[in-house]
Image 1 (cartoon, rainbow, N blue to C red):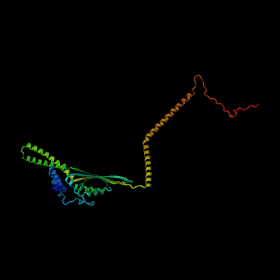
Image 2: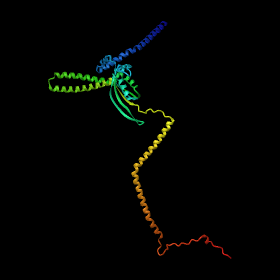
Image 3: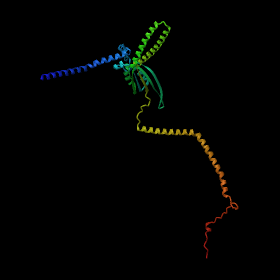
Image 4: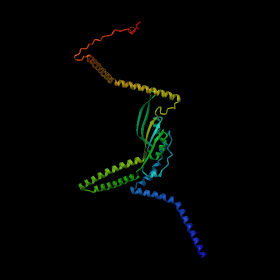
Length: 358
């Protein structure tokens, strides 16, 4: 019995040790097995879509090893040698773009720096520059602003953005990426199938003798060629957008007096007094303008008032005699003496009665 128990324990220990060894081995070998599998699945998917993806991936390193490094042509700002290869972006078709709003001290100097940054790795696709006049202390200052559209190599996209941030003060910064891998290989597959169909129809037409059948085949060929041209243009456009990233810059110069110095207390008092006087002057000026604008109406109103006063005086003057005649009128049948009898003025001393003498 004891021997059986010992044997079972030994077997259990051996099984546990074997299981632990297998688990550790599977963990250590997992990354080595999964990386090739993922690459093989990606290659298989691309082959299913057209078969050219593997060829393009094989030709890419040869193109990069041609001995020309666009970063070596940069001068003044520095070389863009800090790029890190991203295998995901290398395997996918991604259209990358960015937009920056930058305030600069000198527009011309900033524009020159931008040209230096993209020398050899891109080009300026579009520019729209405006010049404005700014009056400061009765002086005219020319302030420039504009939009610049850049196209740069996709492998130098991040490095160019980092350099552009040093041109001036960045206020707005946005980036965008659009994955068009499926669309790209779908167009490529359709283009390949159309070219094969074109070759077959051309070979079929070469063997025909019936004019009616030849005409129908040529009509079909014309339609296929039109589709091939359309898909070719679409494929070239996608390739251009993927290989050359787009960066849109809005540059504007700092306006004179944009950063005023802090005022002292005395300067603030003088500034307040100055503003008050200016407001009074503005008010008087507005009042004068109002009076001048209302002068015709005021003259007309004055004439109307004068006419009204004259009419009023005339009416009241005509009413006074009528009112006097009514007060002196006598009653019928009686004669009234309109003359008033005045009593002689008697001095007060004489009017007093003197006492009689006994």
